[in-house]
Length: 526
Image (cartoon, rainbow, N blue to C red; front, side, top):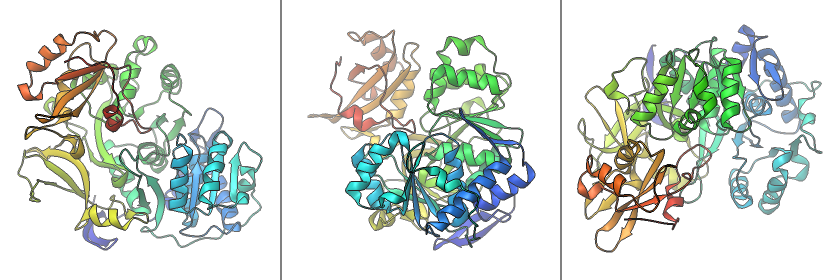
């Protein structure tokens, strides 16, 4: 696909696709025109065709305009996986408003921070979350009560879908913001990443280019739509190619499997944990999934045994590891269609318009095979962090975003993520990648999941501690696990402490919360 270089957000020489849509609204209009009566979104409660999606979103856009919502205004949305969510995405895109999708699981204090920071002009919430929203908004004193619209509630969202309000076209550009997505905030306050139309569009084009998706694909979204994988990797990706999106309010193992079978879902995209949970189900083991064409995974490391399980469970599917972040608008690297077995733990090649450098501790670019921090540049990198000059100054260098992830690039260009920079363990000057130890632990037949952290040590500075999940493990005796590690790891990398837990703590996007693990003080065995 032909490329060119442009200046973008003040960054020079950014590679972009020469022929590209300009806005998300343009994409929806085009798809609606081509696939009008085809189902676009199917939830537990309703089904909307592409024509209905376009018409209802236009009605919402008109009613938002009639209430004074203009280009650049923020629209806070506390809505889960239901049809109203994509309708609000498209409505905001049409009028140039910036949608702020908020995690529905947040506590009042967290909601309060985001509302106070993003300063929305209007809030749209489900009735289920209204009490939390009202408490947070009262403290933030941002949105007047009459500008809070409730789905399934008294101050009815139905006011926003009336079709008798005229819609006024708005000149939206590709550099305009479309979303503010607040990062998970595993350390400190979350940052509001400003995603623009050009960011989203390049991610959609990259997915289509590498995955070879088209209108014959459908997907089942069980991850939250308010996170970048559900929003860009699945929802808008399918809308771009003319596929059908099925969605679930909440992930439930058996229900998820049954819906895959019922609707013959051929494109699955999840964190590896969901696939691991699926594989433990008797229902999963009873059926053939030979109709699945594409299986993608990301958000946490993929282990060799998980990859082998996926290959056996989905015999006709192409398997794609994906690496990215909110700040990269989903993919920064993707596994290509064909690759050797030796590459399965890689996160793939940089997407076609990405420029990735690996920078060592002294700020110099690393040689092939040397470990350093990934710096990423391209049209999918966010415009900025909302109202956060400090983060904007420290997170970007010459247009490259500092990922905080440590990795290497091999001689074929494949990227391997070794660790989060902040998760590297320093034992008496020896640098230990937690992911390396986790990989070895996961290879043990009785270990379902594992996470490794550095514990303070008065002699060595830090020592290695492993949290393991596995019903067959003995909480009193980890001798076997220790011996297993010694076969593959240097002595200083072998965990000195183990702790057996029921499950690893995760945020809504499936990432392991290592800060939470550091505060757990349970039964350990050296």
